[in-house]
Length: 373
Ligand SMILES: Cc1cc2nc3c(=O)[nH]c(=O)nc-3n(C[C@H](O)[C@H](O)[C@H](O)COP(=O)(O)O)c2cc1C
Image (cartoon, rainbow, N blue to C red; front, side, top):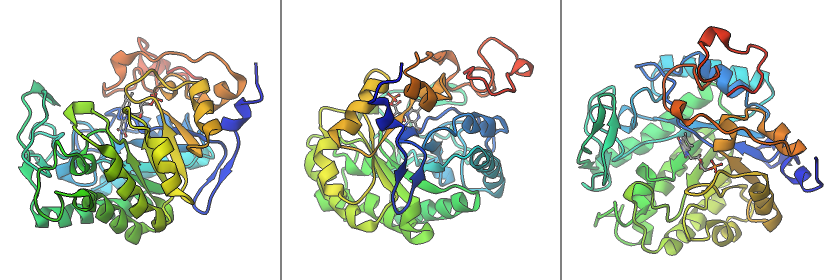
């Protein structure tokens, strides 16, 4: 049954940068459907096109440099073959009327010679390894101790983000979201547990936010602020992250981002720190996407409605609900029950549990685009 509040999630949204058919955003979700060269497989276009009813799709984390590859079979936006592979995806999504941003994800310490095409050691703010094993192409391995980034590495990495953003625009993306959340490189600079530096990129609050700020500014200079966004998850303890006092760091970062005219800031309320309520006022004039499911139950219709009603975000991102419900906005509008995904296929590399139903061969895929996975 449709209730009056359903219209809130399904209301169109317009800003200087975005024209969206509704406020339901598909959250970035890594699915590892690239070939061994990091080129998205043809099924990736079908997967995202089926979800083009979202107001905005944010892709899975895509590496902006070989050094940023966290996982084997994760796609990149570095080589011409990767750009061509993503062009198939953006064309399919645009043909279906959708809007799509690429999430640029540099893994930092989330990497290993056996996850990377170039076989290199991870780079990170400091030599602090992951607390647990790393998934590699040869199975689980002890984490590699990352090499602390030099000032030169930092400048190169900032330029890598800018180059990948230009590649994303060439590939037809409507913009890019820098992954500054969930324990990856930018988050590692922000967090005190992983950033032990005493130079200009560590120490006090202004040092710790500097890498994030420079990466965002470089991307905005490369492709325009209206095509530039960032995702943050203040205090998220995922993968052993430690942030003793997220407030001052993220308030300073929000204040630095607010004047830039970004497409949006994607805030994940991933800890006890009330990121949405605290940071939204500092981002006046900037579109805010809220996510309230990290480390909690999958976001449902009521949780999304509550965020919009509280006024702490303009748009709400849904991750897990999109996995088994490609037509999620339609289901939310009609208050239909949501299907649960088969989690055995989250990180496998083929069509099964992705564009074909689990347990059925790819040839049996429902070409009519029925919501099967
Ligand atoms: C399979 C899977 C892969 C994910 N990969 C990413 C990723 O690449 N980048 C990212 O920022 N978040 C990633 N996330 C987190 C989601 O974007 C989202 O924040 C989380 O699932 C909570 O939202 P939900 O309750 O709607 O699922 C992933 C989540 C899942 C379930």
